[in-house]
Amino acid sequence: MIKRLIFDVDNVLIPWKKEYSKSIDKALDELGIVKDNLDGETIQKVQLEWESTITKYDKKDMLNYFNKSLNANLTMKFVDLWQENLADCVSKNFSKSYYETFDYLSSKYELVALTNWFTDTQSERMKTAKIYKYFKAVYGGEFACKPNKESFIHAMGIYKPEECVMIGDNLKIDILGAKETGIKNLVWKDIHNQKENYISLLDGVIVIKEIEELKNIF
Image (tube, rainbow, N blue to C red; front, top):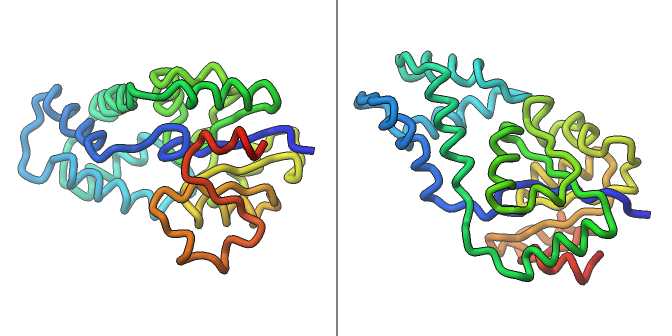
């Protein structure tokens, strides 16, 4: 019997837009930092490099990596401003059916979010989207990053794998990672229309395009 639905955040609960990356440039501007190699695009590339080396998120470790890689002297104030700016990076045009979906699901199941980003930032973005109230908890990357089993076990809480559902947009990290942990109830949000390319990996996986489809599944 399903009791808990585990949602990824970006591109599942909240669509990600390219312009949200400008939150880095905004933080640099607010601090008056002007340096040739310090811009949103460059810092984002270094961020991805850092993410490939870690098993959990830590702001101080990320900042140290930035400074070492870019020969910079960024402070925690930059990280804090960046995260504050990201909190506002949420679409303001959600449909009525979007909220009806969470009304319905939260009336039947316990909803939690599992993200590889920082808990506070993603919580604030969910508040901006006006869906935070539907969720019992938000589990961030500070404990463990997907696809590590510890991340999914943390998000399952007191429930057994068979009592949980993982809903994500990244087939490798969200879906296959959850499957390796023992979660058999899997929902892949195929945002890039790649279903036909991964048929061999989708046995037992429910594929959706929009979050509203969950009302007809659960």
